[in-house]
Image (tube, rainbow, N blue to C red; front, side, top):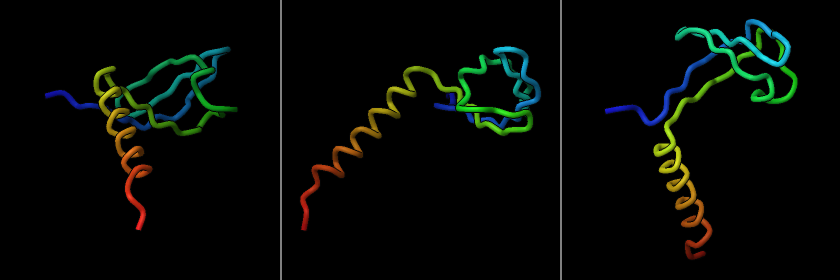
Length: 76
């Protein structure tokens, strides 16, 4: 059985032009700098979540249903 989402903590180790190098216990990844929010500095920490499309759609469906149930529940 596969996990629906995997979350890992990474630290920004290096900025090279429009790319950043993130390093964590599971290894290192290089991503476009524009994927990170706002200004980033070496040493900043990020949680990287990897999820397949089906799991993400299911999670979004459940969240939408919870929001609708909260909005539509009868008031006392």
